[in-house]
Length: 200
Length: 202
Image (spheres, rainbow over the protein chains, first blue to last red):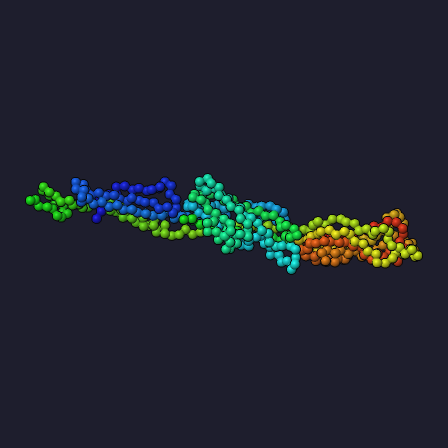
């Protein structure tokens, strides 16, 4: 049976808890009332542990604008990133390029795919700028070549820091293919899915 | 020998020796303490339960879109020159048949799959004789057949043809010169125009 009252509660790092870090509550340190006979003292120490779960969200803050693909250029978008733990970002490209549905005749010197590069950059809560640039072809399912590649287990890491309510900038850049290849006229599109996950 | 107290009764006691024992006295304060500890334990269990739940990855999708405008490019004006003089039959003064000439080639493209091409022309006209008109024997007009070869697609004057997305060399020709009415052409410098129209379309 417990005797006495809670003597002390200690929360380690309580002022700057990071999700996933365990904190310890030294819940009670009780000493028997019979202090005159230490040999028979009863004490109880309860260590309670818990975890603040790592929670990360990413959302579209501003979408990409329309692009004139006939000439070299770039378009920007931004994502809101909120993560209370160190984390990683990966990107998945649906097509691996900007693609048009236009059908080309066999043997045509025109092309219907335009490779691009995706640059992603954000500042973590330690003030460090984290960035990576990857070719679109390396953002398809199963690829792990680049930091943002979907199969890159390390992903683009936030380092040791969190990123609370941060904005990540995304830039898609392209250049027309080298002659004799030319882009066939039409509307081109791709979808980039940005994923965020807690890193242990 | 004094009697030792071996129970936890709340009875007052007195004696010389008391064995080292804890006396558990459930005062109200102690009961509150127990409740606090229970609360903390429950909280810890709850926190641990939360911590055992893996954080799910979150996703956001961005659409990237752009347009390649339909256009035809790099076409420029050119010249078709019949080297030297037109070939005239020395005996009759009539224009000999099968005379043709072509422009130099140039690289042209149309990137729209529904692009079209059309060709029109004006006859060769003698610009050296002012307003002189044709007579029974002579004419100031020489007709010809315009022809455009664009990457293997041969087009003559008339209705616009579907070209599709095409890139390659273009050569423009004036073929098969014929004097109007089979008459003799006036002496002088002749010129006409062949117009090639490229209409880009997605």
